[in-house]
Picture 1 (tube, rainbow, N blue to C red):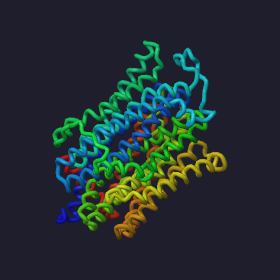
Picture 2: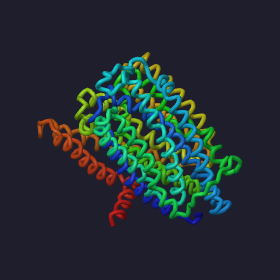
Picture 3: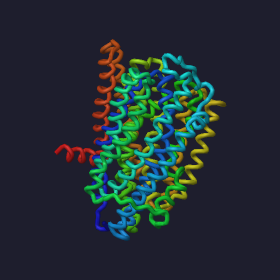
Picture 4: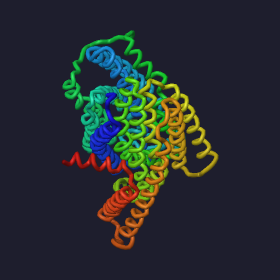
Length: 544
């Protein structure tokens, strides 16, 4: 490892990130397809609002204990155990963590089902409450009553998807990235088909049609775990009913989890605390959720992919004491992320309304919903870099098992987010639902910036001066790209076709994107953005 050149390290990150990006892209597209189905079948102010709020509760815990903290804590401790005590000890640790997590989450699931009415009551405001026609909504007299029912139904999803996160951490630790990245596609695929089928079946048996979506979530969580089991077996994992609360390594994993809930999950905590303000009015939750789902596509393709690949490598360098390699790998991951997310941010701003119209405006979703969703997406786009970079910088601290700084900074960020929400909504900007998004974007970006400065103090120079010059080049290229997208969309939707329809919407989104990508590639070449050459080389290798 010590003999690895800087070029080899960068190539490994780029190649592995490319594999994960392709897999995550498929998952995010399927996730968008599910959102499109929900938009088609359920009105924003009733069925969709109830489903999104109910799903947000177990999904928030999933983000914390599953894809967030649990996976990261397990990776770093598993690698340390394997390096210091051998492979057998690492597999024993995996079994103990697996079994203990299952027991804890089973208990949380039972409590969540029992206290669902109280949880929903805390999160909802008076304007969110809406009376429903009991005949049309199969016996449910209010939106809150429907939300409680869906919350209780979907809570077991937390158990299965968290076990899937342990499987993902184990496989990533062994250098297997493709299958774990594809696993979420099986969740989205299952929830999509069962949800759509359930819409029709549930009505035939006298159940609310949104029940199908809730059942699809549970089946999808099971599928996300089961699809990884064969790969776990191939890398050497064998299940054993081991359980120990006193094992030092188990305590290390859960010791990293306990104080780090806010430290590594500021985005998720912000999203959940925002729920209190989002339910200020009907429709806000659905509009913001749909906008976040669109932004989630580039975050998943770029930010999550690079972070997923970078963490095991950073952990190895930190454990081995190879500080120079650690700095190089972290700085390169940040440069690669900026080269991808800044153009994506500009593209989302320019095409926010056309994208939302193409994806959502049909069935039970109308022009007013499109404009509201596009407004939220436009604001979210400003935070795309912050959302993605925060994952990478936090991984840098986590590789050194240092969680104090992320905890302190993130607690401050969450507090600031709540304060800004209160000021923006009740005392200030009159941006309605967009104010909630703006507060999140500001606090996440500030969180990333402060942590980056602190990490630089911890490990030394990260090449931030070169990062500034690179960012300037990327911004110039992205602005020119964005202008070309805006002109192309205006010509297509206005002067050229002049008609409204699905075909016009498709052309009005994808043609400008194609033109924009070509312009961006030309600008990157002209400005000599080396990271773009690395990305293109990765794609050439994949294709060949």
